[in-house]
Image (tube, rainbow, N blue to C red; front, side, top):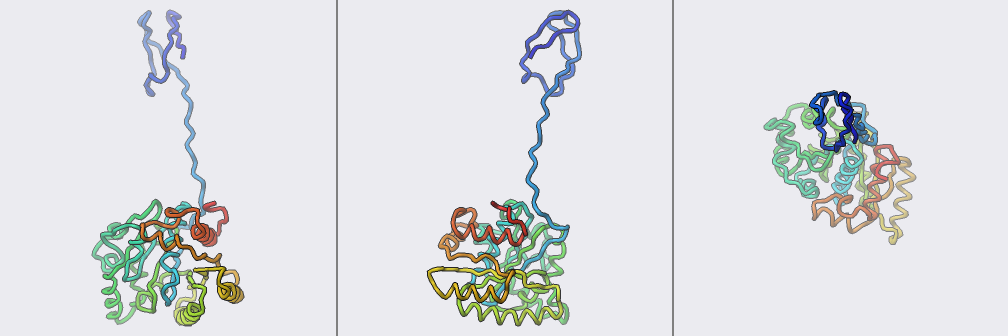
Length: 309
């Protein structure tokens, strides 16, 4: 750039990049006089992130549950949580299973988790494990067996144990996704007294439908005390179009549950491989059918068809 001394009119050719950002004066090397240095620098525009649909300040609490095992509960809970986090939401995944598989499937090794939070041994901050960008985990594990015994020993209010422990997280996250264990135990009952929305993965087989019917009867007994607990999503899993019965079962579920029926999760070997590498399906095989199907589930839950597209 060219700078002209206002005193001696000497022209100076200066490399603008070498001028300090806070420089306000310059000295002429010819006449020795100082003068004001007025340089108009280009203003850098800050990159604006794409807005995402946020909550109203209170987390949406979704329980992923069914009393029957082997239907893809943990796979659904993890890939729903990871997908919502990728979309820009702040997500907490809570593992209430004594097997503690969510930690393994995400490839993290928590030092503490839900047990320490419920007992008050550690603070919420110490119990949370950051698993991914925008995604935190409250880990489960064998220690939760002690929480079951603690709940059983309470004379009253045992069903609110987890709700009381998780109260501080309600305003910290957009979504709290709770992964439950198979069966019907005190921890499952506690989850149903905490969440407001239920997501039920259902394998497209006859025995899974029977498990769904029994589970919904149990849910109705909880809804007498918590009418705000609603069945929001039925997620068909292990769809295999080569097997004729899967189409018939899917059609039957659709007739019963209507809009609550989600896009089916197709049978995909990549979904079973990903946990061994501690990765979500979006990290392990982002182009496979499983990743596509779980993106559809994320869009339905967030009520935004443009997410992750």
